[in-house]
Structures are given as structure tokens and as C-alpha cells.
Length: 317
Ligand SMILES: C[S@@+](CC[C@H](N)C(=O)[O-])C[C@H]1O[C@@H](n2cnc3c(N)ncnc32)[C@H](O)[C@@H]1O
Image (cartoon, rainbow, N blue to C red; front, side, top):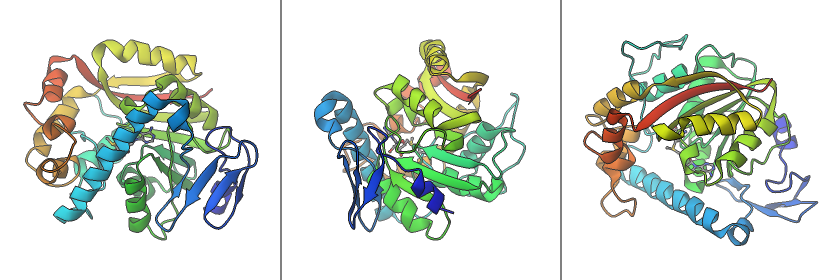
């Protein structure tokens, strides 16, 4: 199943053809070199450090934070169960779109968030990529509930991809270290692109949206959630439309996410596990704010409506 995905892999930077040697992939066109080791394949073009230093600083900070989270989860002993890094979703009076109810007890709110984001989108027998896939929870749930034809997970943090590779041995999913702004796949490689709670970290949002459009096939769907300042929602929609994507759903689910944050404060896995197990001895700063626990600045801003959790579906016509 993965062979045809390898065939569509291209240089992250110039989209040129790649040749493989024992421990690397090299671009035939621009000479970029990508490393292969026994834990992951990295499609990060490290020349970006010199080309866009301030953007790269932000990306390095993400890599550092998520490596620390990964280490802490391993040390705490809950790493095996902590496969999601998102706030989750709890139903209440608002309109729901999921066609399946999660059967799972572990990470139920995160699985519910995924199923609501997917809504009625056809996934079965389609080719899917999850960008900012974190620890692979969404990919495992998509495979379990929808049986896609193939699935790729891309994340900038090598520790996350090493975890996914170790956990998913033999599952058929392909996990790669890579940057959402420089996606290492040929044009029109996927039917469905998933992006959950990751794009706030990308320095160049337009570049990401253009990359999503490029790798999607006509008729493909972009499933997208993000916590954003309320006054930036319209601007984000404009950037998505400028990239060529048409919005078919744009829902404010902040109230559902707040309910999940309330529950997270009482539990020990998923994002919530991070609260109890990460913090002391890390450089992440205010961990309660990072995961929006009740009383944190982020939680209060969501409550006040100055930050909104948006769930969007877009199509490439
Ligand atoms: C809040 S976590 C969400 C993870 C996952 N989507 C989930 O729902 O569990 C954000 C993820 O985005 C990844 N990320 C941040 N910047 C990225 C970039 N430029 N390209 C790809 N992944 C990135 C982080 O490493 C992290 O795993």
C-alpha cells in the first residue's frame, strides 16, 4: 500500500524528483538532502534555517516543545495511551455533523472532535494526509472508523514521528517528518487533507493553504480545525479562498471545546495527561494555558468569545 505513496514523494522545497541512497534522499534538481534513520525519514530541508531564519526559529520552538511533551509522556508511563494532542469536543445543544458515535472510552473527546470534523465527508477508499499529525491518534481513528485507501501522517517534530512509527508498525500508514509549509508530495496526490489544531503554529499561513490546494485532487476535501482570535476568522477565510479553496462549512464549536477542556481538567490521558505530567522541568511555559485548562488565559478568552474554535470543511472544485 505504501509503495505508491513513496512514488509520489518529492523534494519539499522545489518539488523535484528524489533519488535514494542508503541513509538519505537527494533532490535531482536542487540538491536538497533528506535524512533516513531507523526511527524516521525527515523531509525537512534544513537550508530553510538560512533562508527564513525567523520562521525557522518559530518552527524550532515547536519541535522543542513537542519533543519535551513526548519525553515527559514517556517518563510518566502514560505515553502509550496519550495519542492525541488536542482539546477535544463534547456534544451539547449545537448542531452536530458526525455520522458515527465513538465507541471508545479512552480519548473519547478527541475522537469525537475528529468525527465531528469529518462529518459526512467520504473517507473510505480515499487517499488521506494528516498534516500536523502529532502522535497519530487521528490516523488510528480514521483507519478504524473509515478504512481509507491510504494514509500519510506528516509532522515537524521528529519525536512525534518516531513515536508514530514505533506504535503503528505494520498498520500501513506512512509517517514522515515534514513541514506543513513545504509538503513533500507531488501535485494532486490526495483526496482528503486533515489538519487539527496545528496551523496556528505556522509562520506563513497562506503558504500552507497554497500547499494544501496543490496536493489536493479536484473534488478533494480539506478538513480543518483551529483555535484563532475571533477577529481573524474572516481574514483566514479570505486567505483560504485566495488559495483556491471554497468553504462549505465554517462552524464555531468553542462551546463544545470548552466543555471538553472542563473534562480534561479531571482526566489523565490525551492533552489532559500533559497537564499532570508535563510542566515541571520543561521550558514550555504556562502548561495550563498551553492546553487551555479552566482559569487559564486561553480558556477565559474562549469563554469571552475573543478566541474561537473553528471547524471548517473546504473543497477544491
Ligand atoms: C496541538 S498538536 C495537534 C496534533 C494532532 N493534530 C492532534 O489532534 O492530536 C500540533 C502539532 O502540529 C505540529 N506542527 C507544528 N508546526 C508544524 C509544521 N510547520 N508542520 C507540520 N507540523 C507542525 C506539532 O509538532 C504538533 O504535533
